[in-house]
Amino acid sequence: MHDPTSEAERSSAPPPEADTLMRFLGADPAGRLRLAPGVAEAVGADRMERIVEATLARTGTPVTVTDSPDGLIVTGPQGSVRAWARQTPDGAEIAGLLLEGVPYEPSGRRGHLPETVTWLTYLLVLTLWNVLMIWTAADRASWCAGMAALAVFFVFAEGRGAPAQQPRLRRHTVRAAALTALLSAYRLPTLPTGHFTPALATALALLAVGVCLLAMARLHHWRTPVSQPLLFPLEGSWYVLQGGGGLLNHHAGFPEQRAAVDLVALGPQGTRTRRGHDLTAYAAYGRPVLSPCRGRVISAATTIPDQHPGEIRYQPPYGNHVFLDTGRDIIKLAHLRPGSVAVRPGDEVEPGQLLGEVGNSGNSTEPHLHLHAERDGLGLDLRFTDVRGRLYRGRRITADRPGG
Image (cartoon, rainbow, N blue to C red; front, side, top):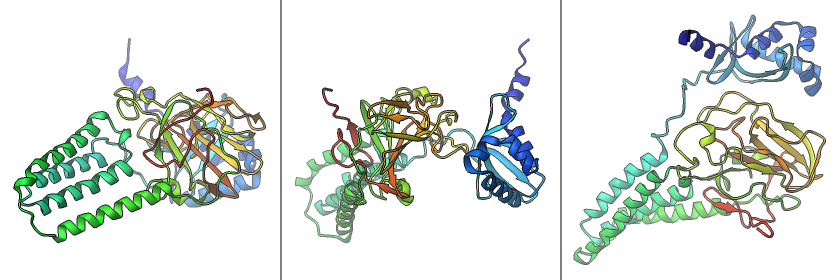
């Protein structure tokens, strides 16, 4: 007979790697070497032991390992830290390990991040209010002040907000409000001229500043380009979700990622082809990722599970990935689908060779491709043979393949 209670209990049971990690942390140094020989070989036995000792000093002993929406949580009498572990198929050893270097503070998240409370919702409310003020303007100067304020909203909404990632209904509602405001121009011949007011001066100044800031962010570059132009690693049409200067790119604060881009595909529901939160609803998920250059694979991972959309469990930040060494630069492609990576460390690859597929592993809330180039720990401006111009947030891209 079907037993839903026991099924629920099984679904909430901690993953098997939690027990393996607890045994690892509770062992002595020799025992840890036996339980994680691959980790010790990859990072060095001494370094692994230093990381473990620092973690146990932070948590105290003994420790327990539990599961949470934020990932595995290592808890001791002095505190908690997040962890990620991957065990061998037989469950006898740890094949991959990551321990966070800061104390864990529960986020309180449960389930998907709310979509209704977004910047676009706030923008819609402000836009509707602004439209009302425009339609009830007492003179032409007030009408111009209202239109200038509305233009400020749209400069930041279209330039900084990446509206194409939102479902069409939301985008069209905001644009319909703007059109409604423009229709109020029929009242202008009947309105008095009015006076140049502080409100009009402020709106015009904000509009000028907004246009300048957006232009500077879109044209921003670090003056350190990749050594050779790359092949754009994706086929078809794509949308830049992160890219450009600091105003448009959350990577800008990280030296090695400062010129990175995040690329998503678009469908009828923004970045989704249909309603729903499963990964296959996203237009980018499973799309092939090609090598952007000739180089040697220096790191590759393919076994890290995808994140659930809207959630981030603690994992290696890049998730499944391929890192390429061109001889001068390091090219990193990240957040690939588990099981899709087609190359191994040491492989030599050619431009256009299949590397894997777009996924949602690592620090990712929805399927996308993260791409950046670096040299000596500093991010490099990306250049492509088949895409002209800079890649900034909100730009749509279709690679110009020869013969395509």
